[in-house]
Length: 619
Image (cartoon, rainbow, N blue to C red; front, side, top):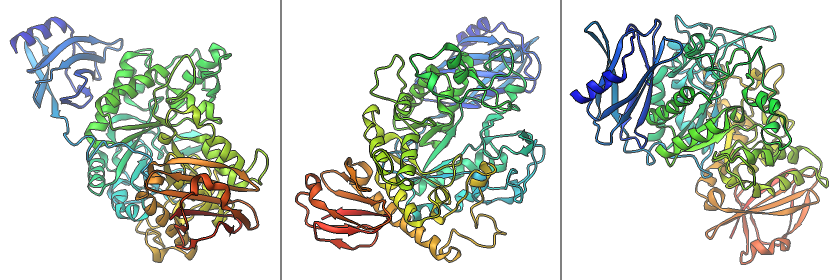
């Protein structure tokens, strides 16, 4: 120990003040596969004291004060034989020693078993915007001292008071619906003042403007409430997906207010906004400036763009992702604004997460138009100079094709032919089953409005969602026919779940509070989702599709135990089907049972009603 202390002093002949020092990460673990750790220290005054660390099994390699002398980094290694305990970071000045405790915990033995399990194609993900779902604790609606203390449900741009306790109160609802995983839009602190967007004052209730990575927002209940929610979810067999934002932070983040280095954020001579275009990033003919603007331009003025080429920035982000995963037991990550981040950094953080947590799932938001562009940003079979290592993406091309398939009239390249053609390009993905597939989300028009509030069309796209390859994601409220377009803003597709607040006139968490139509849709999703959970063909089986004919699209999911047929008639009139065309897949079967109605088909010739999709189990 004496040797470690002396070595530390030699390395840290740095003068620093230990007054009100903050340390990030806020704690760490022994037994991690990567023994290296970089601590970031922050104080309001220049660091002028000597710094030392003494702890058995911990070796300090480098201590450096950063360009902004309010910050220092400590690079250390935690040996495999190091034990859990309290490490003391010592600040020494004129023989006076101030000690800051830093806790080393034991890594969980349940990772990959009951927590950090990963999210797979066997799961059904339910996407929730916490502020808009349910208010389980009214005492945190307004938190004194935060920049935004407004809670006003009559204002669609303000916070409404939904929180983590509200979600925890409804875990049985998700299980009853057939959901296995929850994806929450960001829960990390957004201590931002109201932003001015087009002359309208708006809160950052959506969560995408972080102001302190190591705090869950107090208005959601804080770190304690998040841990309690996830622990109970895991006890009930539910998984959690956390929403990551690597590209930017809120303008009120402590390191945006007091940047550690001049290049902590991407720098421009004047404010430069991203083009929001992904094409220059893979275009072999793209100009360097177009690539730079796509990748390094700021998302908005109030969300500074992080420079992940700065090694301290990238270390901070990587360690935070590992910290969250281990502390809370995160099963999967959805990465926001994926292609806007530095590609080398993205590969590095994905490698670091999977090295520590091999069962973990990571998929990224790649809001692109084509399968080629979508596949480029994840593991793929494309011969390109740079290869991304992301497991899967949010499958926007499949999303667009499902909407066209249900809304467009059948044609040579229209209607269900678009869905068929999009799936036919899966050869570009290394594993398309790891893509998240969806009908809508918090950034899109709600699916019930998109299909013209046509219940049969909604059932058709729900059937596709729950029977095609990939990880299906359902947006909160779809099951009770919540609707709206993004007009005049995203807030219209992020309305409160009826019944999530005590003062609500109706409670749609329960059948008596729902209309007959709402119950019919809820029951349809519930029945298909529940069946899907025990169906080996639908969760992990292969996919075979047949060329659409006369507006009818047929595909099969199958394995050596089970075969499921999905037949979609997208026409305005009934269509006759001759099943002998599908002999390759149905040979040996003598009948088929409708999963929803229970009706059986015993003939090779049958008729499918207009605008109807059947999901059939072959017998």
